[in-house]
Image (cartoon, rainbow, N blue to C red; front, side):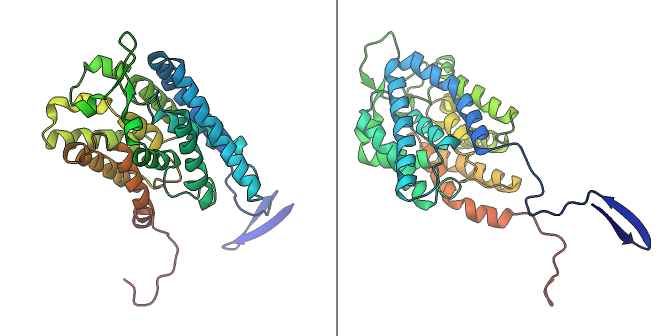
Length: 321
């Protein structure tokens, strides 16, 4: 199709003019490809969990994923919605939920958590992109209230007796930095190996699946505030213990529940770090990451509202400055 357009008296020939509906900018990226990248990034932590906790961890992860996928399929069938399990988002939710529980958790509890994450925290609000909090963290919070004792128990490392023990954050006794960095310590399945989580996080940043802003600012804010609050002697172990690395790279960066704008992401990450440091130092709960991210998830729409870029070319109302 050939058209001519006049610009200041000069005719400009437009060849192959195409008229179509939005979107005009297209990308090869899909939800499935993005979720596959996240799964690949989680593989090192999965391998670490099996190495440190044994086959039981693989069973917990598999149970969580199966119930997450099945509950999404069943709910969408029941509600006569298009089935979306092929986008792999339910698989990611199942893995992340399993990463937030101990290896010795009864399987019916992780099954309940997976169903809650998908049906209550995700699908009941309209599915992927409509939930206002991270589904895996919402399920973990409910499980912590429902089964506090079971959620607090963790297997100790291979080479010792297979009995339940507490994490370094619970006891206040930090192990060597190297052991904590590698993952040779008690804890939930996916939080013990900071090395594996950082490796996965670097992969996501390199693939441009996530921005560096939220994880880097979140971790840095937590570290700086722990020093300010008088925890300078244990600040490095504090970063490696608990779910900080898991939360910073894989939970706080959730597209749906975090701001899109750069300024918004900075504020969001700072808020997560502030809440985590306050809970760990002054709260009655030794961890703090899950509740910090959930609280900031609720604040994300307000942050997005006040940090969205200005729209140019819009006529101001009369009397407006």
